Length: 429
Image 1 (cartoon, rainbow, N blue to C red):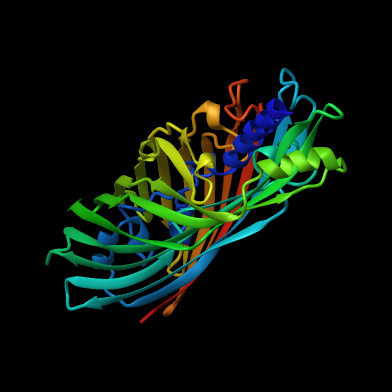
Image 2 (spheres, rainbow, N blue to C red):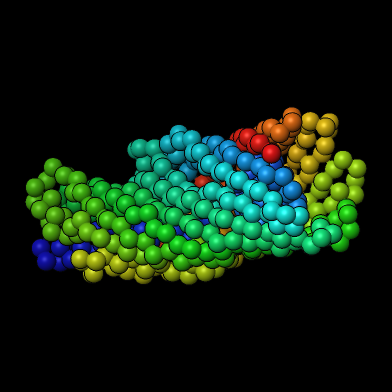
């Protein structure tokens, strides 16, 4: 019985810890912080001509010589399907889908010019976010049933430009709040009937944690028809504190349940640190074609900061562990255009190709990330001091297979598509 107990301890320990092992470090950055920018495929760091410049390139505030309020949000719907690998004895013949959820990512900005060369502003936005919540029954519940990561940032910004308006610089501090909620089941082999059974449900709820960072940018106009933008958002490492709650699931076998009960950790505090990446935007824009603004951006994301994850169980440190992640830095390529159709209407187009940071070995139910291809279309309407911007953004994730290399021993392929609609209202004064 001692050997059996040791095997249960190992199985349950690994199963419970995996929920937090791969929850962070996935490519869950969000750039949908302005309807006009999203309509241009996120290529906006050299245009930056509305208050969402606080997110994309704060130097762009300096060229905005009227006060403005801008607020709205992005509605996100995902479709995802998992198909088990026919060569994997556990996942062969299994499928899975996300629960139907509609996510709303809000944003709001206010700007005000001071004198002839300075503009100040403040913005609220979400630079990161994720939820992967799988429908039941779900074979991957031993890896992840639900993962929910939330962030919200408040950023005051100031920008200054030269008298001729050819050069501008801007920046400000970023105050970010973050939290994470994770849920999954744990399993073990029942030696009394030879079946693998659900033995516990795990729920980790992190507290909201605060961190300070910064964002800065420059905007240069070598000629009246060309613009160059560079923007940088600094990395942050957030120390999370939360509570891990483990609830036993009765199997109907009292002897087996008694063994399992001795191996489950009690409800207790847990801690971990997560390294969020920095972002570097390099952008070029031109209005050389009459009535058109065209921009191309390259964005570098330093996900290589996320090398490993250490999770500490405060009361039962034997459950603490370190898991190697080995993310890589990635690039996204964005192209956008805005055409003035009438004095009141603009039409916008955009395209995006975004590399993912996940090594094949850690692709899984928490975030089945893959390279993404996006296309966007939007319209902008202006009437007096009022503005309305509406954008449709379609995002296709390339099919991603674990190639029988899953570190979670959960092999298969994932197909994901997302539809994003952004609506914003503005008022200039």
